[in-house]
Amino acid sequence: MEHVYHDHIVVGAGPAGLQMAYLLEQAGRDYLVLDGQSKAGSFFAKFPRHRRLNSFNKRFNWFNEDDFNMRFDWHSLLTHDFSMRYKGYSKDLFPLADTYHQYLNDYREHFDLKVQFNTRVTFVDRDPETRHFILTTQDGAELRCRTLSMATGPVVPNIPDIPGIEHATGYEEHETDQDFYENKRVLIMGAGNSAFETANHLAGVAAQITMALGNKFLKHAWQTHYVGDVRSTPNAILDMSQLKMLHGAVGISPTRIEKMPDGVLKVYYTEELPHWTTPGVAEGWMPVDVVIRCTGWKYVNPEMFAPSVRPETIARGKYPLMSAVWESTTQDLFFLGAVMDGRNRRGPNTSVHGFRYATRAAFNYMEQRYHGVPTPNQVFPLSTREDLVAVGQAVVKRLSISSGLYENHALMADALIIDDKAGVARLFYEMPIDYFLENPYFTSKKLILFNLEFGYDNFPGQDVNTFVRHNDPARPGCVAHLHPAFRYYEDGQFVRGRNTRSSTMVRYDEEAGIFEGEQNDSKPRHIIFNFINSVAGVTDEPFPEETYFNSEERGGFRALQPGETLHNPGLPECMLEVGGQQVKDFEHLRMGSRREDGTIAPWQHCH
Image (cartoon, rainbow, N blue to C red; front, side, top):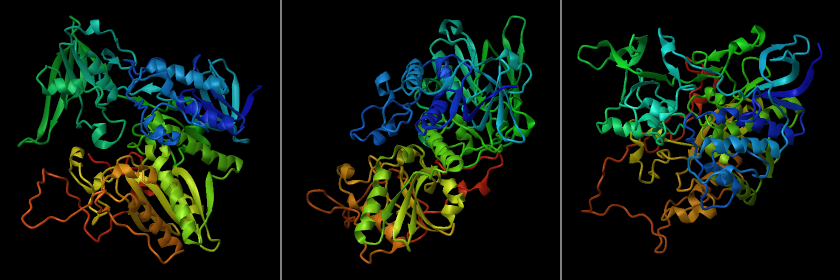
């Protein structure tokens, strides 16, 4: 049989597929994107069902650097010159999905990306001799490739295995006309954003909405800093639940659905009651008119792959098991897009603003592995105090304006290799933290990792809204908001770490100093200089680290005076001790620390 060959084939022309296509196009690689629909980004032609995106389009952020502004632009795909930004497509903070569908198609056309539409891949196998993947399409055609990237997004709905589930309507197909739900009783299965999006859409017309959350509490994105948790935009249903408007969110788990002769649905359920004096389980049923399941998706269709190339899955088949660079258990088979969140299950990669950087990191890895192109890096001389300042300023600038480190906080880092003999430092840009921790090249060197992270885990049990004061300089690890952290490794072993305070703009360069008010804006920079020097040892003169200006012009700090009273409205208490370890290693990201479901726990967020 005749077949077409390409070095790289990407399946899916959504945002992740187009992002990879752009990178391959710019690198001059032999590639092709296959998509089963007639246009790019077809997912956004239908989803979200109620057409309003919950991703931010914040257009004004004071500073002019394109990379800095990409921190607040959750829709644009990456380009080499920050062209083809989404911001011209909508002025809404939460845009309509139709505008994003148009943007993706314009992006593909503008860069003339090689996409073959109306081509649905039905089966994937592998030639045992050449190791090339064999892709069969719906019309029986055959294509082959060296590497295969699956950017197909959610492929099948996750349908609960309970009797009568066929009487429920899926999120992917439920009626969106509000008139259909007037004065009806609606049960919504699910506790995620699609469930709340649906409930919010029906809140003004349904007689009663019951959200069946199962045996778990709601997780709000503003608490966990995870975009996949419930957003505040569709929260009218929560207000109505607490303000006695008949709608409610309850911890029940449907176990069976029966359709009565009059069309009413009888939903049987269980409710766990471990907190009762006599712990137990309640069982019952409730009559409703409509059941809508919003129970998520699966990103892998195992029937699509021959047994020899079928990737292992985790989380009850929802995600493929992936390495640090999102390669599956099948060699040369990568997964791109929201599926990348399955690597950590608490990161930003469930949305475009996260996985565009993850896709670029996967591309950079593939360039190094398959084409011998080094991971992006820059070499600096490092033998004098002036060299040290130059290296430190380069790191400060990255931490101050990089959108990749900002969006992939606690998951990606820059790596600084210190070469004492050569008197140089080599700065590698924006790769997964666990990639650096596993790669023998980096584990055999003097390595400093720089990243941005939250520190709420050092304040157990605290409400995030109580963090309204500066952190304690006597306990520098006690910083809750997003801030830089740096860790030094020698021969793969963690030696020590430091961090800086958080800042108003999460910037630490001189341009942003005015926003810090009374605090000395040079301190974070000097901490970084001193930390690099603690490894490189190029000067005996430390950089000053005064916390406050303490000047008449800028203000400062004074200790509590005798007889003076300060009011503490329940401010959070940090568990770190003065003089104790303030920055810990990344044990929770290492491959050996997989959870029972196969995922790697990322930085521990506040719950």
